Image 1 (cartoon, chains in turn orange, cyan):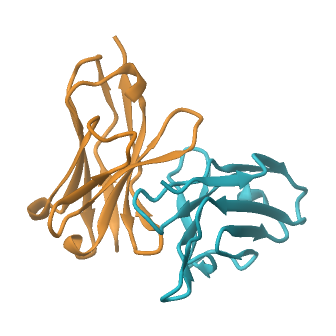
Image 2 (cartoon, each protein chain N blue to C red):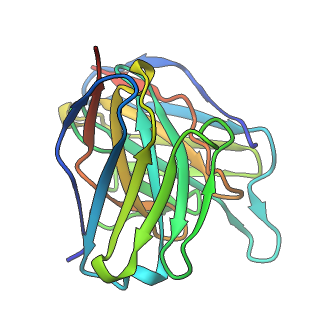
Length: 117
Length: 112
């Protein structure tokens, strides 16, 4: 059974760093892209970027380039999304999802990030 | 980037009636080598992650009820729900898979 399990909700202050995780199981981790998707409160889905664990190739949507870092650890079959300096505007729900080729076929449960002073 | 638009923004349909959601892309999503359209549809219920309904524009994901159908090619696509059920209340998104980043449409909120 394919599963993507994300790390728990986190509350940070502006300027803090943060790394959230997406632990996968049930499939060959290195064969599929993993995507990170942001959903701000009451808003739609925004693709932040994707990573191919097979070679750690990471690609970013223009709006998120330079703002976050996406990575993967083959030994832990996990993908990561990290910030070096959070802003209040980073408060959102973040989802990881597996790219099945024609669509994002499996999703994590989401990680709620709250940034507030 | 390819820009995705959806219409309407929201839709109220009576139980048992038909709901139709439209999606348009700024560039053709048709792969002329495979004749697949790189378009996916998702359903997101409150408090849940999105769920993949269709890929390649019209291929139903396993477990999706057959009252859901999807069609279209090139730049115009449609998701249809016949005989609306209470559990279909959700926001529906289209997404292009032709180029990275795989942009989403803004969503259509479906209510009873």
